[in-house]
Length: 146
Image 1 (cartoon, one colour):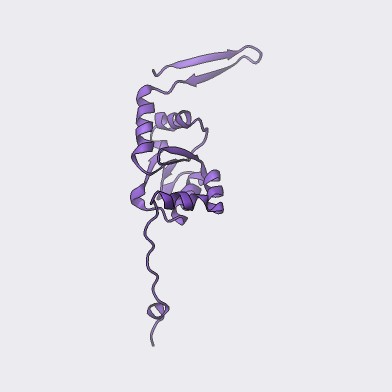
Image 2: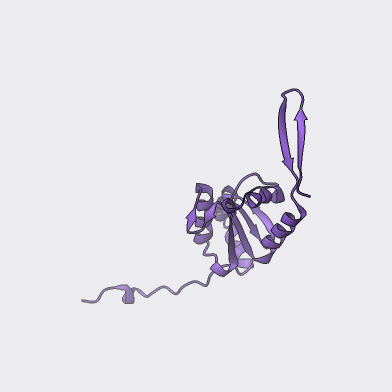
């Protein structure tokens, strides 16, 4: 059902519109958040975030060393129904939105808090979502020889 409902508030004469999330959109969002271990709905793309909060979320996931094959992102600016639908789906009014194993985690401020406390790293490690650590070159190999 993809219809609009209009409610009137008599005292202020302000109309508010509430849109019911269509069954098709809800099913698509449910599938999207469950299909991959980490799903980020953001404004823009990881290489070109279109807002500071989306940039912050991408930076945090990068600092956590999330494996690229475990993360899927959706640019909500590419589709109005996606942008509004994900807000209704999660009952969270802002973008970005992060899902881990199908569960809504939060936006960039919550991610920052979880990153700072170590909780995010612990969760990502538990679900094997971290990229393998690259061996660091030994000091001898990185020192220029005369």
